[in-house]
Picture 1 (spheres, rainbow, N blue to C red):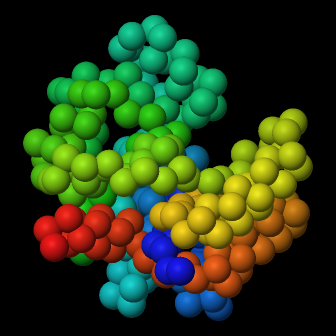
Picture 2 (picture 1 turned 90 degrees about the vertical axis):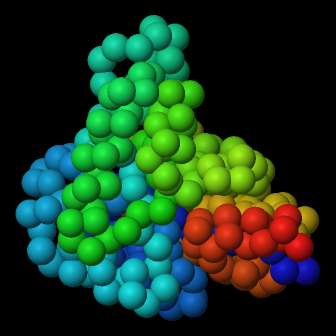
Length: 249
């Protein structure tokens, strides 16, 4: 039984370039393309536009098989918006819920800034994953207005053109948390369960995961288990396009 399998590498920025490339090498060894979630603005160091080597590497990856997707602007929470949304973002996204409570005007500004940087350097993002998978309804409206093809939540991939949700939980680690070891075991078991059921599968890798050999091992074993179960590795854009084609057929 075959099923789509998306592996995303989050938090791609100059400060994480070495870690991102390490994850990419692990995926290349398994024939798995990556959806690279790029932070285009300033975050933990210089902004993307100042790192010519990383920009060239991203263009090379896009020319092969990987997908470049937009991942916020600064990847940091923004003041304002409903208090309850900011509270959820602080807990669930640990301070990175940049788009969790934005109104449409501010979401449009930040989305446009990020896309402008990426397109300026030959990268064309069709999709957007908000930091922490948290986005206000106004952000989704802004994405549609700006013509993005898809966005993602923790539980689904949303085709913005078709107005359809592809249900699939994104499995990821939470490095540094008190429950890190338990979480790694849950991830491994969850990925195996979804793979054996032949359902769409998503695995999110973060640069910080590489600080723990246990998390790296758990992630690579999960990928291998999914492939053994018949997973068809693809990018987010591949998944959305294939789903739309199935509906049309």
